Amino acid sequence: MESTVIDTLHTLRDIQGIQGSFVVASGSGQILARDLPSVIDDASLNQVGPRICRLMDLVEAEQPTDSSALRFAEHRIDVRAMGAALLCVMADACVNQPALRMAIKLVCRKLETHDWTSVAAVAVTTQSTPEEEPAPITSKSAAVGGKANAYRGVYRGTRYPV
Amino acid sequence: MLRSVNVDTMDTGFNATLKGVTLADLVQMKCLSGAAECFRITSGQRTGTLYFFKGTITHATAGEFVGDRAVVELLGWTTGTFEPAAASAPANSLVRRSWQNLLLDAAQVRDERNRHVALLSQSRDSGARPGPLPPKESPMKSITRPLTAVAPASVAEVRLDATGRVVNGKSENEELTAVTAYVLHVAGHIGVGLGLDPFKGCEFRSGELRTIISVEESGEVAAVQSKSEADVIELRRRAGL
Image (cartoon, rainbow over all chains, first blue to last red; front, side, top):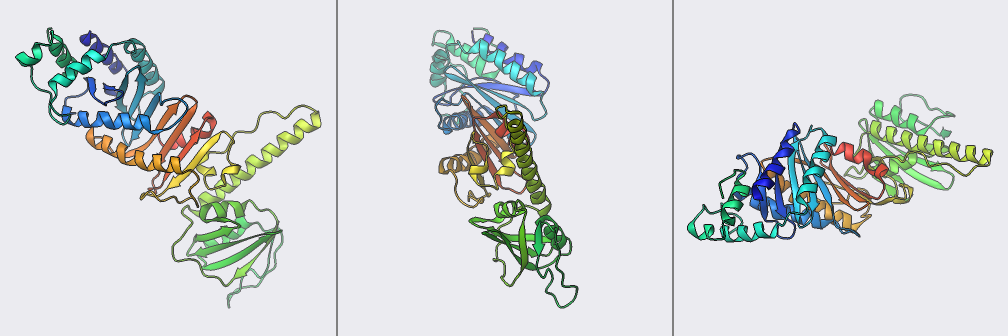
């Protein structure tokens, strides 16, 4: 299933200008999946996740914030709520916005029913602190019914045999 | 039209009494000449002041308004008189925007009003119900005007400087002010974490409510909350969203 998540996130890169994406747990900000360039290390990403969650909780309204876009000089990050998780897409500022919106919509449609709790549970077992790199696969983590391998495959953006 | 009274009190030059002069004419004349003067403006029961210094408007008051908002308000007055005054401007300039920008802003506000009046009179003549209102002025520009003059769908507007201080006269909405200041910090951290460039702006959507925050080149930050798409288009464009 997790490799399917990666495949789904990877479809975003069909749009020129999209550099990658990641999925954050809505409540904790935990990184649930990533498909980002390797230049963005996990430690930095682990600190970004909770901040994105706080931003989404910031605006008090009758309904929760369902989407947001952060614009930087040359880049943008679009965030879309999908069930218990947030899809975050990093793109060039000049990305074709209608195409970006449609690509996000399609990915959300595929992933909004995904059960992220299993991924989050494995993430907790493999991360001692949010700032640290995820631990390498060990016999302990591998003992979680094969899900550790699956999670690592998602998290690193690389598929490993499960 | 405004009538000038003793336009020039300097030792050199002409003293003049002109008719049909607008405040926009006065602003252009004094800014282009680099004058350092203060003018008292009267229009009916309303009074205001304009301070010029070295080609810029440094301060303005119009009733309860000060700064940029006062300049736009003054430029909307169509009849009255102006005369030199002896007052000196405060040390810190309260007018942040260029006089050209303020003139354009005032012209747009005037055009919008005229179009609205024309639409209303047209519908009254035809006996029909008034049609839709003309396009609303951009929130970024209307931010210098009182909130009552902004499109009704606009929930709140605020403009902050880089330190988080409200610069559009008074705090119109404490919640939006706090949200804006917080977003600046957190979004900055997100940018640093991902190795991205400086933060320029953002948009949040909660159902129909849209919150747009834009960091401007001057360093000031404008924020608008609205349930109307039309209210946020200009600010969204400025934020590059």
